[in-house]
Length: 366
Image (cartoon, rainbow, N blue to C red; front, top):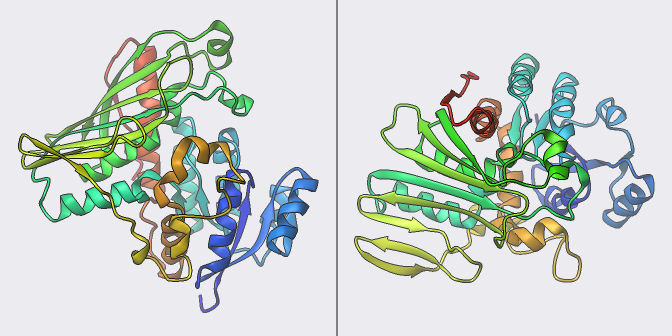
């Protein structure tokens, strides 16, 4: 493709953060936005001078000028919209999770393969500055041989849109799963999970999931290392944390457990505070500024930013990888098979917890 990639954004809550990034990217052009509320759609499109405006996702997919669709809609819509966009011949980027059932994960993988189009799950943690720093430590040998990995994501979801109420914790686990599997250099093979505590009957009745916390132990393909992941969404008194820890034979990295406490690198038995650098220099100069600022700031906030600390400067890195994968005609780093594996860990973990902690094999999506 010789011209710039024509991108449309669907979902303009959190999704609005990506508008100026696509507009500034040297290989992309934001040609349309989509939101069901027509007044809000018009206001946002006017603010950012976006020409295409769609209140219907189906209508958006009929636009022949759109090459790729970035989906930032509610979780229940991700699978159906991803499949529809792929079948319409569009490349797809989708916020997490990929889906909430194994059947839908398989269907997205099949749709991407049949369409010959790229699918990328836009998982923020593996493009955060913390992750990029630790991956460098692993690659350069500072960590040494990885012995164990731990991921956690604890977040109180009261006050979020209604579809979140009572959601099984592991159905939204990719922020904790993705860094440990990526650092471990492998996909997940199987999972054992225990549910702990109880949420209120009103919440539990929505999805039939009673647990306040779900904690899983993951086996990695062709690896002697193991990973542990813990997740909570409701009625667990804990400040927000999205974190990972990697234990190596030479050094171990531990994510700060409260914001501002500082990350720690243990070299042997000697811990020291770590200053994590920004990685804007790895991006085209046109979008480098978006690692530290964008649509949402102190005066114009979104709940995902208030709780998520801006997702570690990951947004322009995600956009760049998605766009360049299309330009270079190669799979995206988080392609459909990888996304399905990461998502399936949570789905299978919840199944394990509901069955009393039995081991559940992760399907092979390849």
